[in-house]
Length: 109
Image (cartoon, rainbow, N blue to C red; front, side, top):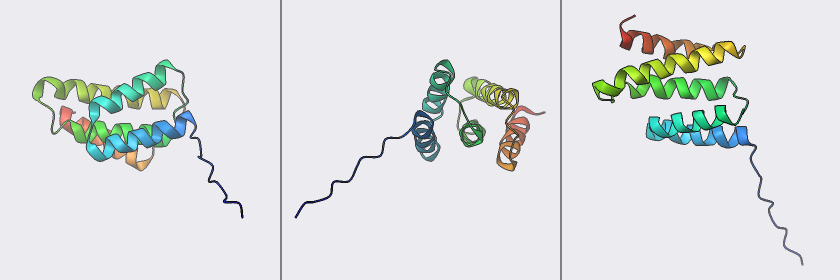
């Protein structure tokens, strides 16, 4: 009797990025999430609304635990990510709008 071997499912780069961003979201690891984002952009990886929503969520949550010196840069990075999302023709979801509203409130806009 032959045992069937389970094939290891290989993830696409986009799927791996989504998995890694989810891990960053759970651990509130902003620096890792931004590093993943920068790598994805430099490698011309196609980001979808889930990637952007997760990144915006992490930015909007991280600004509260960031020291004042990095708080402004975290907020600005969140707006930069949102601008790229719009530039790529991705319509913002309710989650994205909520995250950007939280960033705007933190900035005082």
